[in-house]
Image (tube, rainbow, N blue to C red; front, top):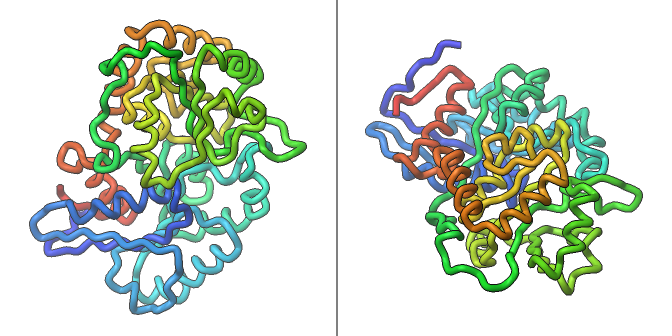
Length: 365
């Protein structure tokens, strides 16, 4: 597809229907939309609007450059999108984009989201085929979804620096005299919480290790529902319920942890994930042990087994120099991706042009 420049004066107005306001909908839509007015280029104006409620007034859409639906997956969503394309978009010439950060067509059976999305699979597939374009967070996700729609672009995840602030590396702070504080933060989709389901991103050996070291390490867990394999140790493991996404950065940085873990089971669903957990740990100022899998391919400490994860945990607990080396490596690995705002909003400019590129347009930033 040939690309043509949008000539000034021009207004880039984006309307997004957000399906997830406590996760990737905020990370990938609400935060960048809040920052769009900060872009400065003579002759251009940038604005973003978002809503969870569909607006039926046709004329409302005439001034939008494009409209997007995030994480739409049900029959009701399919019907809304069909209505927009057939009754609104055709007349207003407003393109419709589908935004998605996860693989909704191949979710592990133990994942709590499996039944919901698999029961709606045919509607998700119809939506993917109907829309004018798709944005995803990773190349593997683009590869999977390309069988439904060829007009796809990758927009990596970034964090809002105005929420996180500059990272203060833990190894530069006062040394700890008590047992190391080790964090895992993630939703309950990482382990089976339904009866009769077996599976987890935590292997049996790792679970056994965590349970057996509650007196040696202070395990700090942030999640929506406590892992069922640790519930009986509530009095020895620090378990925090998930925080509002606007509170999360200051909360996790205030926990004063030493390093983290990010285990992922090897499967297509996880191969398509983004490295958002790595970005968050780096922003917190801590190193982490990661599974050797696509999202964490640039991390310093990558483990291929529970035994290797455990070995790295034990080394990090004893070796502050290794923590320093690991965090500095990880920071360099994600530095250019970390923030929306750095380098004169470089990532935000790429965000805008990724969308426009789906329709052969670009802004010469």
